[in-house]
Image (cartoon, rainbow, N blue to C red):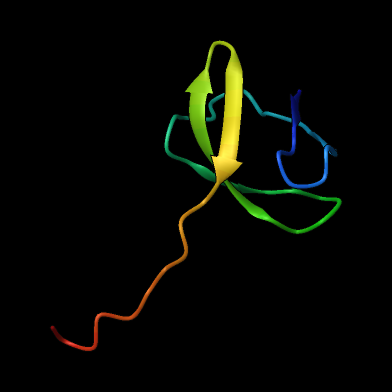
Length: 54
């Protein structure tokens, strides 16, 4: 189990989850990136930005 850094909701971490994986908070819907597994550490996932071919 982990805590959402946005709303402090509880997020279940499934077996097989990997560092860098993106999870969604079931309470607030925030997209969170797994930064560490031992201990579990989550942070808000970076926003995907358009590069417009640059």
